[in-house]
Each structure stands twice: as C-alpha cells, then as structure tokens.
Image 1 (cartoon, rainbow, N blue to C red):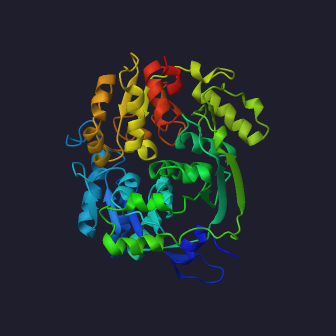
Image 2: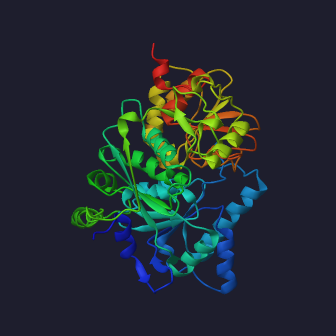
Image 3: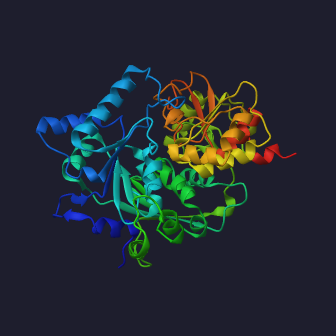
Length: 467
C-alpha cells in the first residue's frame, strides 16, 4: 500500500510516536502576525522559556495595519497596542520581523512564497486559518491556536493527531473567463462547509496542473472553508520554476539537488483515500456567493436560491439565516444585485496576477459613481511590481488608487472596514456575518468579477462589459 503526499510529509516529520498518543511533529517554518501572538509570548516569559529556533520563525505586521499610509500614526489604540507587543516580542526573543515601512513586509501567506521560505516537503504553521495557502507548494501547512503557537516557539514541534486524506480531481480545463477563485468556490459548494472536516485535501487533475502557482495558492487558501485542515498540490515543474531565484532558495547545483528532492513528494498510485471527489472543469463558470459561508455560491448567471431548495435540514436552516442577513429575495437574478463597495486584495487574491486581471478589465474604463473601491496588494513586493508594470496608473485612472499592503477589508480590523447595511463584492475568502464590519453583506467573487462589478455598480462578469 502506498502513501498520499500528506502522509509522506507527515511521516518524514515524526519526532516521537507512541500508541494511543498524538504524534509529535517537527515544524520547519513558523509564521507570526500581530493579532494572535501576544499571549503565547507571555506564556514563554512566565515559564522562562526561550524560542527554540528563532531562525525558523518570521514575523510580519499585516492584519490591523493601515493601507492608506503605512508610516502614519496608528489611530486605533488596540491596533497600536498589538503592533507594540509584536515589535517588543520579536526583539526580545530574536525573531526577524517585517514592520510597517519594510520593503519585504506583507501578508504572511503572500510573503512566505515570495521569499522562498515555502518549499515542497515542509511543515509550516501560522496562527491563521488560511495558512493552507502554502499547500500549493506541496507543503503540509495549517493554522494553529495561541497555545500551539507557544508550543512551537518553545519546542519547534507540535503534538498532532494524524489527518484523514481527501482527493479532489478536477478533470479537463477551465473555460475562458473562469478563474481559480471560481473553481475553489465550485469545489466548496460541492463539498459543503464542513465536508472536508479533519481532512487534508489534495487537488489533482489536468485543470490543477494547468494552474499557475498563484492560482494554486488561491485554491489551497480556501481549503479551510470546506472544513479541511490543509490543502495540497504536488510540486511539479511549475513549482520549481516559481521557486528558482527566490531569496531563501539555493542556486546552482544546490538548487538542482533541492529540485530533485522536491520531485519525490507526490502521492503513490496505490495510496488510499478516505474521500474522493471528481469535478469537470468545463462546468466551472464565474461564481458569486449569495449567503454567509463560502459554500453558498452560484454561477453569476443564476438566481438567489430559496432555502426550501435544500433538502438537508441543517443546510436549509443555514440558508434561511443567511438570506435574512444578506437581505436577498429568492429568485433575484445575481446580475440585478447592486453593490456599494468593492474590495480587491487579501491572501486569496492580492497577488500580481490578480491585479493584472483587474487592470485588464479597468483599462480605459471608470468605476461607477458612488461605488467605493479598495485595491490592496498582498505585499509591498506586489505593490512595487504593480507600479513597475504601470498598473497603478490604470487603477488611478479608473478611480481607485493602489494602496499599501495588508489584510485590509478582508477581516475589517483596521479603518478599511465598511458600515452596517453596505453590500460588498470582495475577493477575500470569507463572507461570514460581520466579517468585513458589523452588518456588512459580503459577496465573494474573483478579481475579474470584482473589477467588472466596480464598473457597472452591480454584480457583473467581464463579458458583460463587451461592446
């Protein structure tokens, strides 16, 4: 019997295994941000412990940082306090930190791959559920809680129960106009919000192989929205070429040796899977979420469903609550839904390819009057590249200047949040009640749909702008 990719990574990182106990797993890379870490460091101080491997830990300021001017005074007392704790903790424990104003700063799940810190066969954790992003590189990556953060800081290990294995095979190719965001929304709708609970999802198939690394990151990023602990794509030549020349990746003969090692990380043909799902890529079209979890989405040419259309009583009850919160009438055409704001960014869709999609739609067009639009790159490196390519000029001409990097309106911890009752088309990963501010109604979309929506003032696809 063979092994899955997840099992191979897991088995190669076991420090200790005992009957009836969780395995003790070694952690190769630990990412930190300012929101969920202060308590963990206080725990270290109280127990008089040090950080076991500070060189395998990296901090970044991303969640509640300003995106209009990163060098201005922080106006939120809570944010200022958290950033202060982050800087003191990293300084006291010898951890490298990218603070506001640093060239390499950005969202943790964007800068990890950019810097080459995310490499196939690794284990990687962060105090953030969307750590699953890094699985696009064949990395077993997952979010952890505050007590686990302290454990990793102190020991560079984690006691963990072995995860189950799920395979999602996407056959064929995505049609023109369909994106990785549409694909993962379709997958989550198929699996359900909790359908992958306790599992690692490995994505396979022709459609996955054809995706760029940034598109694969989008898919793995939202694996957690189906309840998965992690998402994986086996490394291939696309992975290797993306990593070539990155700051923390060796070069020359050493790179070739690493690449040969990376190629060993794939699932065996006779591996066993606890669940398996097949999807035809040709059926994936631009999608929009209509409810309050990412599993509640439909194609953009559909209508808002009724709660009665769902047979499962739990799903039906969730739909009833979602429709009440989102304030939509069943049967309403998705394209007839007017929006107040558009958010383009996040660790899901804040990379350079996402910004290029937006620029392609906006070139020569203006954002609809009365629509507030925020374009927030996932890192300062993405921001610089966008400026070098002239994308910032396209954004400004359309009516939405390029901002500085950060989580921004994805989670609404800074000034970028919206006000109650406002309806937003957003490229982030979650549309939960209050996610982007109390009473805010969020529709998850791809960057290209967000861009078209900003032009028309209602949910639209780029094809709607033709002619």
